[in-house]
Amino acid sequence: MHVLVINCGSSSVKYVLLQSQTEAIVASGRVERVRELPGGFQEALQQVLASLGDAPVEAVGHRVVHGGERFTAPVRVTDEVVEGIQACVPLAPLHNPSNLAGIEAARAVWPDLPHVAVFDTAFHYHLPRRARTYALDAEVAASAGIRRYGFHGMSHAFVAHQAAAWLETPLADLRLIVCHLGNGASVCAVEAGHSVETSMGMTPLEGLVMGTRSGDIDPGVVLELVRRHGGDVEAVDALLNQRSGLLGLSGVSNDLRDIEERAAAGDERCRAAISVFAHRVRKYIGAYAAVMGGVDAVILTGGIGENGAAMRQRLLQRFEYLGLRFSEERNADARVSREARVADISARNSRVRALVIATDEEIMIAREAAKVAQGAQEIRSLRPIPVAVSARHVHVTEATFHKLFGPDAQLTERRPLSQPGQFAAEQVVTLVGPRRRLENVRILGPFRSKDQVEISRTDEFHLGVDAPVRLSGQTAGSAPITLEGPAGSVALTEGLICAWRHIHMTPEDAEAYGVHHNDEVEVAVSGHGRGLVFRDVVIRVDPSFKLEMHIDTDEANAADLPQHSEGALVGVEGAEGTLQRRRTPSVP
Image (cartoon, rainbow, N blue to C red; front, side, top):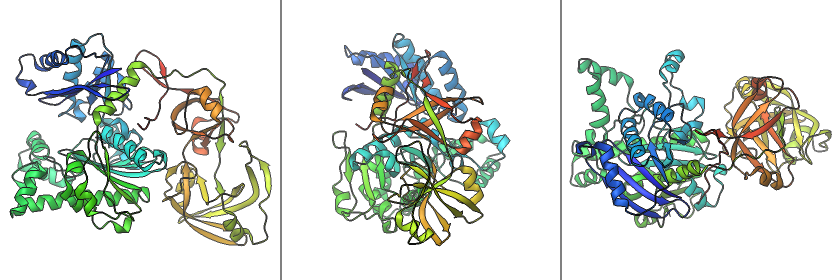
């Protein structure tokens, strides 16, 4: 499918025509000073149409900056969708109006083609509550839609997948910090393929120092500026968005290249601008490593990240405490492009990789637009999936077991579990947290290669711990916990998790359902209680598995599910009512 990707800014239209399968560029260009054209955006898009000549266009993908809470995935554009994007204008007054103008003009120029809106905020839909919530009056925040949304989602997602391919490691097994550094800049913590923290918030103004935006600022400063401007909110808005950041600090430019040139000549304001910019990025990298309990790679992308060797060196020094060792030679030689997207600038003995990756938001838009326009595979009508409620439990190594129960103790089976070869043991332990204890937590057998404790959110609050949501086996950088047994105790430095909801299935089941290992699907669970649709359910495929979905006790209680409940794979219902399977984007 040939997809025309349109990115409408306030005064320009950028476009790229891509062949979705090969991702080859058929045509590209830019129309400037759109506001000065008599016909505005529609005239600009007529120019785009003329420039394409005989090149085929089969679908149109539109970048939309803000999707609010409603749009958490790409959607086919309808009149109703246009109204929904319009409702998000107060959240992105500098961007959504231009995005909408481009959509409406393009629908007039190509009325018979499918148009797909792809949202910058959608990748951050998974932000956990603690990361997306501002400490405001909850009712005020809810009524005004005030929360952290995040931006640059397509760029963060694209380079995260590129990094996984380069590292030859499934994205679900990685902890990444992505720094998109350009005139607009943001940092994103990507864990198990999802955004778990990001520097931009309700609007693109929060976070890093940017070309003309202030980034993080004390709210008291904003109030003082409003007072000094006689209550003129628009004037303060313009100051923070258009006359701050690198431009405000340096007094000369929002372009880092100009600022570095002046700094080299001795300009102290430009030197200060560089120092403040780098300090803010370094601060976020350290914070996000703490949020994820470690990091596997730090990625630099965007105009500054891809091309600013001097700034990269400034940013990545003195991270040896995280296991990241930087190579000055590799950094100086690093060149990335569409043909060679990734450059490793870390030292050879670095445990954490430092990667420069050329981003490509247009490819992400084209991929998503093609999937929506073509229609993903429909869910096949197959036998329902049994649902099992997983109570808190412990997996231990043989060495840990003997520390807890004595050198001569034997792990004995109490009853078999549904998954072949697994059993609930007779032995139980006590979990000791900073706040309280949980007694009689059962050990599951057989022995594992590493210790792992799975609890629910309710247990987490009871114990007074902060356990990350992880797939089974992903214990690196997770929370500590102490186990007590009759013969002794073991203080685990990591291993405590809240388990991600998942479905076990064999390769034959996966083929029948049309899914793959690490795909994420939606499952409608029904029973005698309230039926719910569980989103973000991870598919786990192994020949030894038996078909079964696992949720924890909190989720089962919320759904009022009885024993022996069943679920069915469902998808996101598109504009025309087609059930579509949601797939994690594949690594090219």
